[in-house]
Length: 418
Image (cartoon, rainbow, N blue to C red):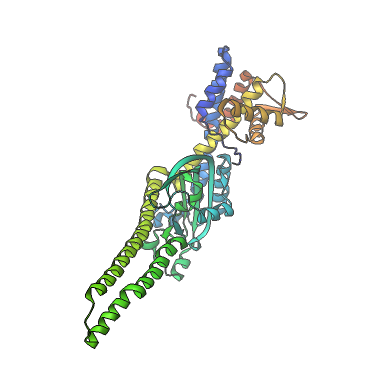
């Protein structure tokens, strides 16, 4: 499994873990808590500015807005800026884009539902899927007849799907009615799900329609046609012909043998019919299973839609940025000597592996850049170190003062006491 930048631990948990390293020095513990708190608020402020920009440039493409309200943003919402900022937030949240090869493989394979889904991808002008975090779990799946088998299923912890629908002209040209498609042409749909099977990614597309696979069709039609023709030609039809010939010639009909042959043929046909019904019922059960999976996805696994998805993404980006910054600062602050980028990277990744049995690819470059941009860390001859905790608190406080300088001056001139 590919290593990810994503850190699968809550920020509060990581804070407590780092505080234990300062145990015995109450001042260091309190200063580290304050630094953590101020940095968290600072990143939250930065995220607020990003979401304001994203919402403005998304408004014209938001399917949740009334068309009359949406049209007021025509010419004001820039899709290029929207996509640029969305990708920035996804990157900060440590999401990665699913490749076309992975998606094509998901369309072919299925771990849980075993059902072929038909998806009209042409109605999308653009579509992309982004994922974060992976794990595996043992699941029971139905195999042949009543036999169930345990298999290992790969899951994505978080999945975001981006769908840009074709403009109205496309739907008119292809005679697709809006009330049937359940979408607004030209809009962008965003959905975030949790715990989605890697090989069942296609189930999160809103227009996925269950279809019989080639295997389902062969199991249904081949035995039906071959068996039906065989039984009719070998049993039923000869018996009926023989009875008809005897009737026309006036010969005595051997009712016992004729009825026996006819009954055997009809019984065999009945058995064949039961088999065909069972095969079709299997397909129906798969559709029901898919409907259940879809219902669970919408009700239990869906954690954000359209503009509401921004808040989930921004919260994730804040947490990831905070965790990376605070981990890099903490390890450098406790180090007796400055560390190279590679040494810091190795120390943090080893800490996760040894202490939490977690393998990840810590984004050390991004973490060090954040320390440098905030003035908390600096590089000398290829080695990194950070300023002491008491100085770090003064530095981050100066940044805050700079952020709100305009408001401070304005309110002071208006006579407010701050």
